[in-house]
Length: 412
Image 1 (spheres, rainbow, N blue to C red):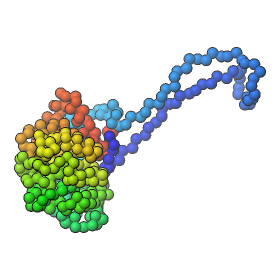
Image 2: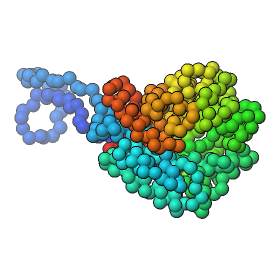
Image 3: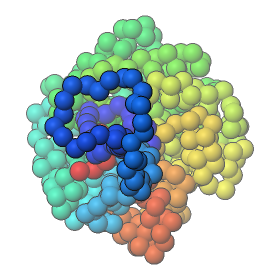
Image 4: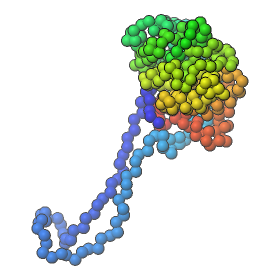
């Protein structure tokens, strides 16, 4: 697995342990070394000394890549591996004990700051520190947390108050030049980094097709970077570049696009896109976003009837494995849209939601709106992995990608 950009970097040293030695036998008397022998041919061949049996020269063993190391997970419990593939919600106004328990008891390795606050940077910094302090050898096996939030701008800006800029909506950002937007986004990224946030679940790269008001999750909230492929790609990529320059990862969203749906998956079930195809222009927008090397891609929970009519995208091997990994060649971190409180996925039990997403090839299950279901989700994944070695291998692959994103692979 190739490594990707992250707030953190890990170094390795390969040491050659030995080399083959070729022994050449000269017929000479056993004596102290003297002058160099003459190059003239001898007048008589000496009695040959029998040569010992020589072992074949061994071929050097190539150093394994980190993902091939049989010892990479040495000392880790199954529960600790599973914990890395979850991101639990933490209320920025009233953090709940269930969020703390998710890390200290269920080994969850990542948090998402959710809700809204105007308390400012000092308050958020203290909140983040209270959770990063839970990292330890028994909770996350010492692995740092991904600390994420939604800091898009406009209607979707979780963190406000002293120390945070008021970020304009994506529609307003699209009126700036890409260079200007990148410079402003670098400032917004520095503000996040200063309080310990290292991943922004932004920017939106959904291409709205039709009247904005008819598209509740994106167009109606001014979350679109314009209404052409070129506008979306140039400005979303500028936003990403600015945040990345400040050391904050981004997650482009909501693959394969929410620009054509007529309802919001957060509060409506059965949301279906009946137009988008596997090789649609709106999907190709994400190709440009992936070429800009984001830390993560978020997958939506809408159903795409012309791609996989039987599964929400976050549960679809066609969408995750076939399109995102295959067609677009993305090998980084894949995160779900919220699977804890979204009405779109309420028909499945919390545990089944997590299992279906991981089985589809997702790496990180977002449990943001209702952290109360995190324990049920984690327990279900642990139990399935304990019974099913193939599923356990899927979990390890997902956990590896999470640690690569953190700059912590292979784990020490």
